[in-house]
Length: 201
Image (cartoon, rainbow, N blue to C red; front, side):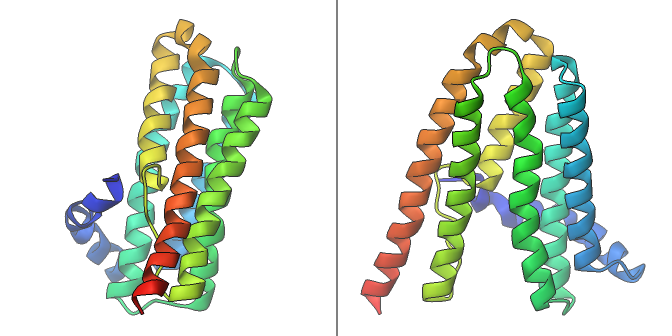
């Protein structure tokens, strides 16, 4: 069970916004680039001013990014805007945005840089394994337990927690370690989904 499974409900709430954007000639690629720019600017701010209170921005930006990611996909599918460039922007934008938004955790007090870098590597690995499924079987794998939406929820809540209760940063490394384990588990599940689908054919 992952948050990805409630995506249809989230999309239905965003559909009026999608129609408004389409009416005003906003394309899926515009939305993708906006989400990337927002992530890069937020990440840069959090790295340059590594104050726990600023991590209040993280849950807000992550929620906006999730909404923008849903909107770009809806515009692409439902408004006939699917392009190869869009796929490239979407996949690379997701990975770059994850790095931009989660790398600032490295600069928090009590954070072990090696653990944060390991966690970021595992994040990239899970997305690679999801794309590997699409390359082999034609269907991208979104298997959990720690997909993009789940990461946004957990890290957004942690950003809120350390902003309000800075003393909680003593648990930073525990979270990075658990997150890395969950990400490796996710990567394994995505690879297993490739093998299972191949065996069924």
